[in-house]
Length: 505
Image 1 (cartoon, rainbow, N blue to C red):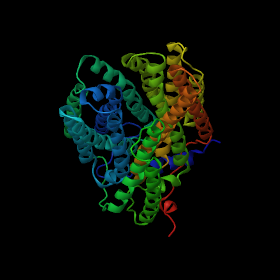
Image 2 (cartoon, rainbow, N blue to C red):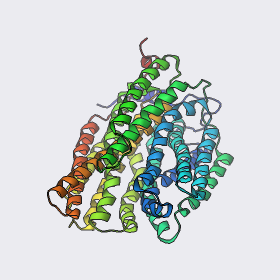
Image 3 (cartoon, rainbow, N blue to C red):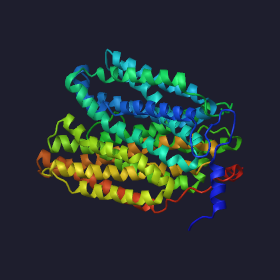
Image 4 (cartoon, rainbow, N blue to C red):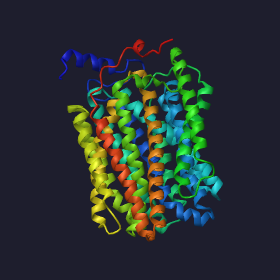
């Protein structure tokens, strides 16, 4: 039902950030030159750090050989990165409220650059692992910083367009990461993956220090150390447990998967209870009043479903292309590149449609297209032409491109401005958890089904193809839940006054 003009006007007024001495100089729907510069520099920096996140997967076999380490040890270069992200991201909600934009940016890019340098100089596995952890700390801060800044500076009527540009960062960087990594490894030493990134990171840091200005008003409040500890055990435990769950199905894993999952679950419950208590004094590390918004909650649930399917596909599809269809790593990266580029190119267009028509007109067709692509992948076997895999991946990428921008924009737009930083932190945390869950689920299903087929006498390639079929079938079922969740996505309502969000004493 269409809303009247006064309702729309009040919604926009409530969603606009309060004016202050460091506030945007934007007039109407146009950004000031200062604000445009800030957002552009943050976009470039975020692209660099996310590109780095995905270059390691293709390099693991080379690292195992050069560093003389086992597959389990090499996997820690990815697992430790995810664990660090899971621990740091929940804290960013507090950091973005406590400190100004410029020092937070400087800390993020300095840590990322330092970690990149350490990784490039690493004489062995232990130092390389330490470098990846430092890199992950900077990466974890960057995306919440970017999203919070955009929500603070950009008027509601233009947010979709700018968030569409963010989707270019989120989609294109991971898509070209494996391709760049494969190309570097085909002609250079693995350390060049870091040496080539380092000057770009340092250039972004230098430009940011020279050009980025503070655009938020910091709040001087103490950090709750106990919440930080609970957060580390909660999200770190869940991510580690999910990663161990995937490894345990093929005989890996150093500890029983249930142990970190139980520790993480208990710590998460205690963390939630403590945040609800601290919210009364506005001292929460991660303010969970974001979930009081129906639009935010439904959008985040839809993102969880789609992220599970996406991350599972990212892990399983390269296995299918290389181990079943016989492509080499460089060809695999090249085949996955068009989908990522299409998703990125769609971003600005989808953003403009969101600004004009809202989220639902994009989310429902996108969710349906994602589901159709997964059902198509589930029908593939060891004789499927590579061209059909490319078509399915491009269709999947188009569907995801139609959904992520409107979901993230409508989720954050439904919050009061003072909750933007916490909403961005929640989005980042949920993405990490959903990605780990999707990866563990797909790998577990693939491994168990392959083992069952091998035990029944199937050949190795046929058994692996059967396991991958089961994993994609699982993704297809999950994608249907995304369609159901998409039915409930609505335009964000006006943010409720602060007292409506206050928990009961």
